[in-house]
Length: 189
Image 1 (cartoon, rainbow, N blue to C red):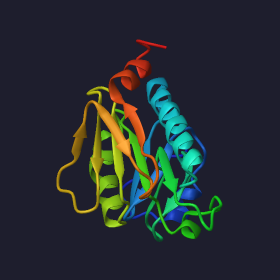
Image 2: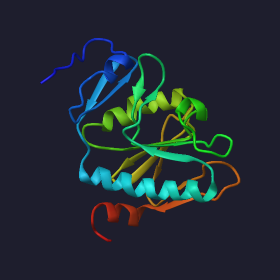
Image 3: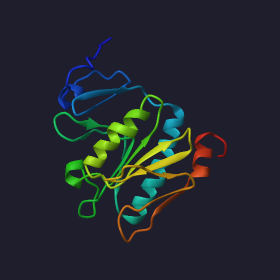
């Protein structure tokens, strides 16, 4: 088994060279972040969010939706894999890279016990620094969604309804959170 040295400053190139072992490797400002494979509940939440966001973006022709694993690189020492991300279209077509799109317009992270601190702190600060317009943190345990925007010192905590608009002039995505979380927990189908 290959052991990684978490004390050194890592580069994106070094992280990308690590063996595929089922863990997710990310690096923020040279700090290596390692998280295990997600749980079924995490993946159900991500699946349902992807379907809803993708349908909204496809219907409104306003964005291109992707999910992990997909590297987002912010320099030689910072690379993350958001659970879900949306890029704007480029001249009416889906982009082939984050750089071509001009940047992320939505990032979603679904909390896991091993990622909660990183998602709420390190990644949030990174996305705010990168001026990502909306960063959503989905907390299935608390059945809430935290919405962060650049400059926010505190999140907007959503318990009943999530509303997101990719761009002005298009219909918003609306997710009623009670039924969403009930489905994730297997309470309703």
